[in-house]
Image (cartoon, rainbow, N blue to C red; front, side):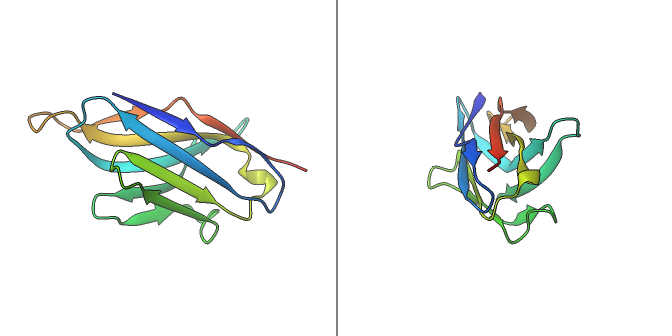
Length: 120
């Protein structure tokens, strides 16, 4: 089971990016999917999360600018980021809480990260 992110890149301040994350492998169910980010010299922080049923949560720093959503294929999650600021520059990581069978406990996996750079 693995998570693969895509969509990072260089964008000017005020611009937008859409990050994607796809979970692959033998997955029975996903309880939650999240986006974290880690800027140089800083700790990793939670950006947004979405749980089964669709409830979402956002860091105060991105509220009103970012939207997390699940794809039609439930194993995908997106992060739409608008009005980007230089302080949004970071490696963005996808995270999922999932299980591979009904008999198994949920466990956590991470993607490899995708770099977002906001700069003019």
